[in-house]
Length: 199
Image (tube, rainbow, N blue to C red):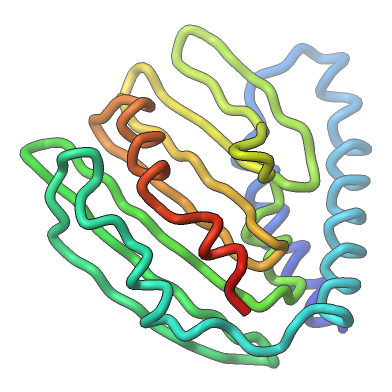
């Protein structure tokens, strides 16, 4: 279980560090305590899920079938699937790439069978984030009653919308030189209900 907690802590630390923006001095003083508490919660949840969760992942080829044929009009240029395992963890992944001109979108569907690794991949599910400025925003939210994380850069016109399903699947749509509406439309074409029901 120590391996599970360590992996979750490392991945979650990466997310929390990347999500930190500029703050005033008083907020900076409070940040370490908040981050430590969040990491402890993630580690505890990771250990619990490793004990209670299923042990077998969905066939990666089945996940691949859920990839949309196009990304709100952007043609699919590549589709792949992979199933791997190491240190007691099993992961099934399906990836789709879509591109037209300078605009591109990447869709990933990942299943870790409910092990604690999911909390490292979706550390945002254990914290609250809500930041916005003239450059863009990032926030934790809900999407069709599922925990989700959304961010967008007005400057670069890139963003991401990720959703956690059944404490085992993470669906992520990342876009470059596209609008957030296009990213959301792409996610809309993925059958999340069908995915949630898979075992």
